[in-house]
Structure formats: C-alpha cells, structure tokens
Length: 88
Image (cartoon, rainbow, N blue to C red; front, side, top):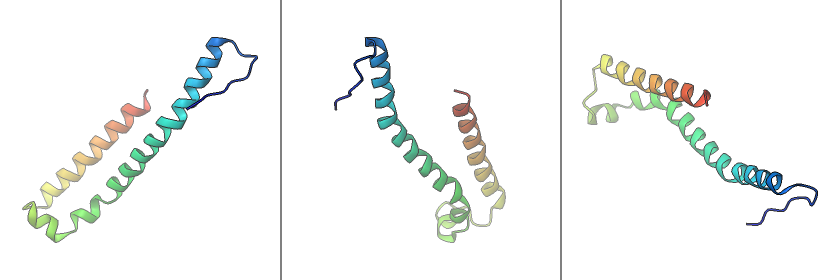
C-alpha cells in the first residue's frame, strides 16, 4: 500500500496524514461491521426468547423470571459497553 502526500508538507505532518488515512481505511470498516452485528444481536433477542425450541433446549420454558433476568443483563451489559466506548 502506498500513501502519497503533497510536496509542501513537512515530514511529521506527512506521517500524521498517512497514519490518519490508514486508520480510516482499515479500522473504520471493521468497527462498522462490529456495530452492525451488535445491532442484529440486540434487536433479535426478543425473537430468540419467543422460540420454543430454544427455550426447551436451555430449560427456560415456563420461567419468565429467568428470561427477564437474561434480557436485562444483556441490555445492561450493552449499555455499559456503549457508555464506556462513548467516553473515549
């Protein structure tokens, strides 16, 4: 991969521009994919909780309190992770 910069920039400025360009072309798409997967995960929890086969395999059928705790813990963990990521 080659990075080109204009001739009028000093060495340090050119290095900073190159690092920023590489950062946005490599890290940003990765973060976008992780974000999309997390949105699918968060939005599909109710569909999974309504699936009788899933509930039967985990022995959660007829136990709404445990399902509530599981859903609440997922959303709390999501909120904490989102909050800690926003503070950086």
